[in-house]
Length: 179
Ligand SMILES: [Zn+2]
Image (tube, rainbow, N blue to C red; front, top):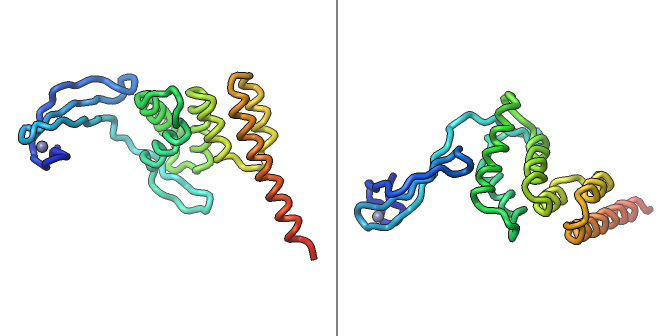
């Protein structure tokens, strides 16, 4: 692999260890030309199902996109990058186990929510509040209540915001029906 700093073609491996619960190898490399160090990751190369979006179009599964939305939901949460990688691999395994050639983005959202629910409740609430339809606000509220007391502050904020947006939407739709 070319050096990311000077583009020299050779580097040597100075450390190699398992990451993401043994489903990834992390290699620390040193460029033989400039001596700078960088890290590479190695993981399985397996075929992922295609994603069918809500508009009916389909696209290849995008690992990077999923990593970004997980990272966003987990901002400032006590979760390590290694845990995020392990969760991404879990989600990937779950998707492949479905054995389908293509999967709806809705189904992927459900799988991601389940994974986040197990990992971090605050991140789950954040992701779900963006992902879930406003119609589900009562079901969402029940889920948050079932989670217990510790995260209710954040959950309440999300709910208030969601309710407010729902009320606004209803008002706009009523106003637009007036003669
Ligand atoms: Zn170099």
